[in-house]
Length: 230
Image (cartoon, rainbow, N blue to C red; front, side, top):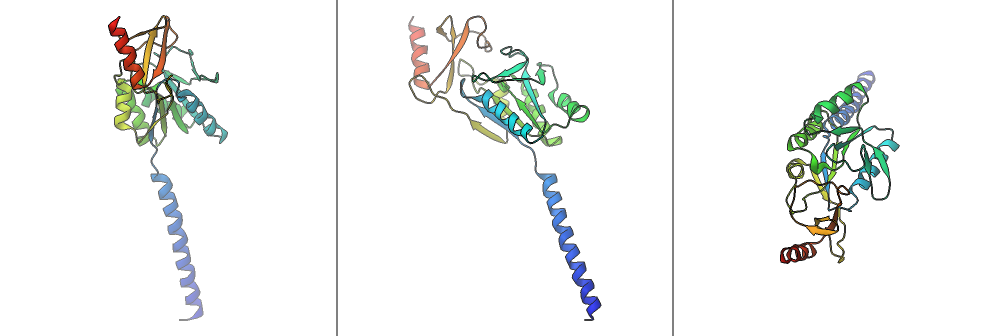
């Protein structure tokens, strides 16, 4: 083969290899799908603290996060409050009727590109709103991280949590301990410092003398039996 033809083919093959590598890299970047994450745990397991840490990590890298909280959660008003006394303003208070997909999509388009959506007290979302969060990961490729409770004070799944367990790509339990030292699983409700096991599913911590204590299974059912005997 003549030298000039040899050089041509060497250049041609080199160009094709580089072009293919670049296309593969672009293709990989384009098809890395965002995920819906659910981080759940009993009360006092550090869910809000974890959310605030994730927000800090994104913003430290120059990325915008959108913090959402269901409007039914009146604790902290329009902010996320951790038990370490760290607070952060909420970007969106979501009523039951709000279409979260449309709201975030509009924000992403008209206000600022959203790097991640963070949801506090996600158990209070409606199942439809969880579907809308899932759609954000699919159609807009925006990662969504939800933090919330699994069950109510009667050990029943919240509808929002149930839907999150059905749809989330990644599920992780954040752990805390019971008064006896075992892992806490349940959220026992107190009224005037007495354990109660009847009432509406939603009663916000700190309102109308309502408080909660995280208990393991043994301690929870001991209190339930004690209450039934009185």
